[in-house]
Amino acid sequence: MTETWTFDGDCTAVTAEESVIVLRRRIAESRLETRLTGSAGRLLTVVSNTERALVMLLDEEGDPGAHAVSAGSGGGVSGGFRLANGQCDTYPDEDTVPLDEAFRIVRHMIGTGLPPADTRWAVDR
Image (cartoon, helix red, strand yellow):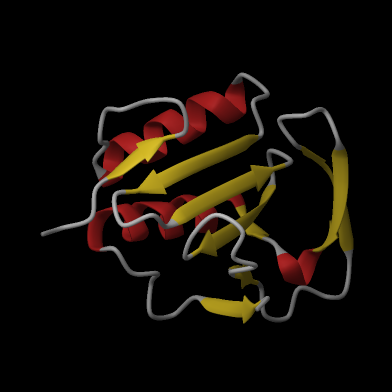
């Protein structure tokens, strides 16, 4: 059976393309933290500042998981990553990816159940 994914608080499974459309809309509405839940219990979280995104994949609730990283990001930092609870975070650019890359990662995860093979991940476990 193929894993299906839903946005937190919704029970309707989304396709890979629908997931990116909804994610873009949420970011445009300044809803910068989004979580998708897979039918196998995995969690895919995207926190954006509208230019970059922290993309985290957890095997289950409470798992430290892993996050996508950018090679050669120059050692900078970016702020404005607003969580659903109102907290605003700053992350090293190497721990985030450009927003278009985040969309590509989400599209691939939802479509195949796997991260893109060329995406680098930092394991937080």
